[in-house]
Image (tube, rainbow over the protein chains, first blue to last red):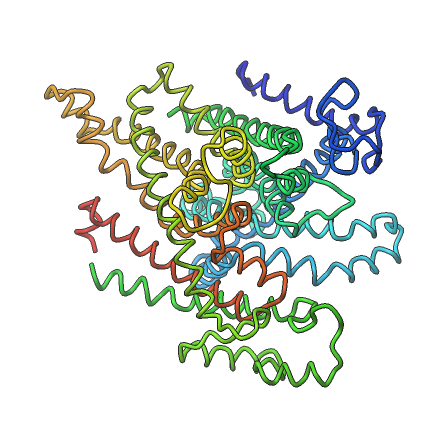
Length: 288
Length: 306
């Protein structure tokens, strides 16, 4: 795959972001939750991005938040990818009543506000998952049960668009002669679905992934901004922005608490969207 | 045409019913009770309250009771805002959200379509790639980033506009713009893609061969068919602008329907949540039907085949 120069630049910047998320919190002289008397300090040589209401270093918290935001994006997008592709494949290939019924289910879920679904999912299974994890070797993760559910929940609500796209593709592909021939030589339905049809739709799926990634990150920050997603003491870009927004006042707003989270979040989303744009150009069906 | 729209409407009714039922059940099975405010209630008080509001018995029973009430046009009482019916709350808050939403929607189309058309005319030029990055930037800027930043800049920094509140026209400007900007980008991109498609078609080539000027080609001949994808997108968009206003209402302290919805979800206020979802579904349905109708109006081929 040959990438253009802007695409390399975008990948490089994203790489910096990922490296900062992985190594930044370790290298920072401050802890994530480390409070100090130096409250609401504006950016200076000591605290490059300033400090918040409790004297915590904003840069450290942003890099820590990057871990959660990026992880949510990756996990959520992958889950939505798996469900969406499988669902669309089956619905499109079966056709007839099964297809109508399955697409009606998608219609219903589309119209249902996502925050209802995510919140109910989280509050329903939060405790159950916590006790379940406590009994296994995964006990250290038990305290993050809510976060895990948020990952899964976002994946579970994001797959609908992809299911529609894949189904529409399968509808046309399954009429093509090569599908008929593989049926004639006696290949079973799963083989036809996964070995014959799936490779045909992969380009569209990769393009969609670059769309789903920013979409899930956005959804997570949106929920966290409303106070329904990631909860303190954990922080994601959404909660940091919400913290900043709650400090808005006409007298002396700590602007750095709003501007830096905003720049980081918008920058990351923009890079991902630009990358998607470049990849679509590569596919050839987008130089428009 | 009318029969087509009527058929679309009727076939959507099962979806609306399913959404409403699912929403009611989801809020009911979520842990936490709408009646438990600060302290836990004893079992008897809870039972009395549940009977009073028709939330006693098994889930299917509750759902049937609620369904039959909705059919009679009664959306029930709010469980959190005691003494107010859901219909009252929606009646008061929906017009505010609709006002902001319709201003934003108009802004999104009024700015997005000409911008997209301009970019298509400039195709492959300097302006085009600049435009593309700009459109992606607006798409990457969620309302909950835009809202606090614009308050910081325009209300507190430049002191041009009021930071929050409801009542005067100047208080509408910031929220409406914040809500519209991501959709301006989306509308512009769709217009541009649609236009580039049509500009490559035969009738445009014929018109160009006849000597029609480039500007008139884009704006008079190609724009009408090119706008079809945008029309299909505008239906869900119009309804989406209402949910987008959730954050806007929070930041700008506007007592709109989104605020009641979020509070309702947090408080497990089942009738309020279901009522808002019902209204939302009908708006979605209505706007989709309007999009269908507009599509038929713009595209003679669809008109003939229906």
